[in-house]
Image 1 (tube, rainbow, N blue to C red):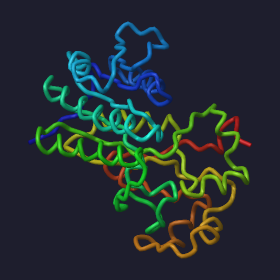
Image 2: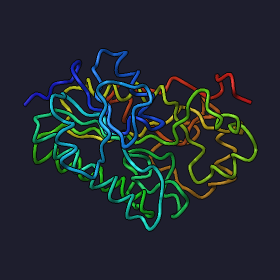
Image 3: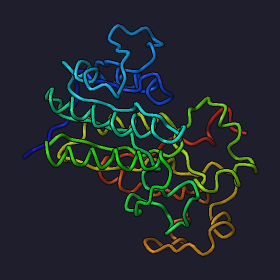
Image 4: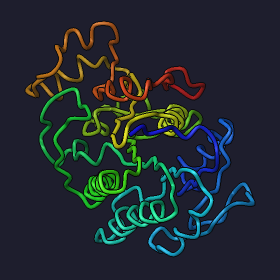
Amino acid sequence: MSIGAVRSGRVLLTGSEGAIGSHLKAVLRDHGFGVRSLDIRPASDHAADHRMSDLCDLADMRDAMRGVDAVVHAGAIPTNRDDGSSVMSTNVLGTWNVLQAAVESGVRRVVAFSSINAQGSVGGMRETEYLPIDDDYPHHPMSPYQLSKHLMEEVCRSYSERHRLVTLCLRPVFVAHPLSSHLKGFGTTSFVETWRDDYWAYVDVRDVGDAVVRSLRLEDVLHDRFLLAAQDTSVSEETRTLVEREYPTVPWPRVDPERYLAHEPHRSLIDCHHAREVLGWEARHSWRDSPTAP
């Protein structure tokens, strides 16, 4: 059975007022898609086709799904909060509601925002198993947020296998905006310590938008998951120096570190070869080219 791409039509964008969602509205429109935005907040751009809805309300999702061809599901609580119940409810039950409503409405495809946190590979709660981190890294989610992202990926996989709904899960690392104040800290000494447990990884929101469009247009893939990271780290020290000092005993079983670091001294420790091979995606933007870079 051929699984076609979604190249035009109307896309339901959940989490449209978030840091990523607000950027994706323009990206989708620029690529010829109509956008129905959805968030618990009103539309900052006063869009006519906007729904103030709660992901945890299945009736709301059913109503929002009418007349759309695909979903970009960016709605979530992006951090740990309270005892974890709100995170689990919004991120897991909310995803289930989106997928259930999509199936009932005959929607063909959902591009869902997961996170590298789904693996439990970041945050320093367990020892790093190997470098560089790739999409095959074994999952051991530890925090409520990590667990919620792991489970939402499993919900997506289940709906693909049961209902033939295309679900593509994007796993960005920290998402940076080109004019964000966060960039002022990139390259500084303090980032070396504070971002150690995240392997100094980041990805530009413009590259995230490109991955979304590619996921909508990807053919003949029923379900998959893709790490998204910039090609370089967020610090000025060379990656070889960082690894020798911070991760000297972590094995490199899948790639020779000398070859991996040979041509890019600041190369990221997040290996996105799977997104490159399947989506044709590669990060093109670096903080080092930003006007706000130190």
